[in-house]
Image 1 (cartoon, rainbow, N blue to C red):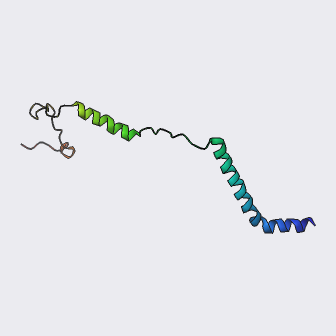
Image 2 (tube, one colour):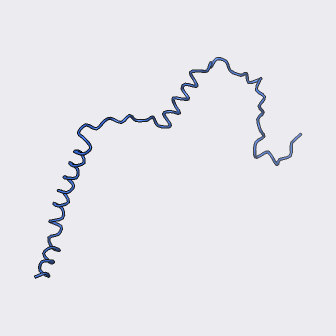
Image 3 (cartoon, rainbow, N blue to C red):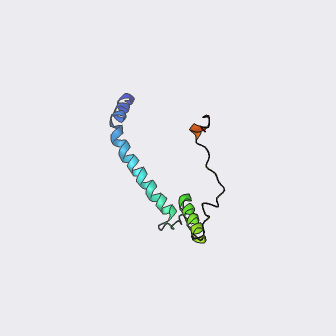
Length: 92
């Protein structure tokens, strides 16, 4: 008797497993919504890092006077020699 029972269970397992899993999933889904509540409260989304960076840069730009710039003649920076010309002797 037991071998026949296990053969039937093994043969019809896919036909029994899917409806059982479907019912368990549906009950779990509705139970979760019942416990959680009907109206979920909206969550305030925090600004992303890139959005905060853009806002900060815009605030910095608004605070500056763009008509007051340093003259190119007044800059004390110098242009470094090209990398390829470092080991080359200077031509006179």
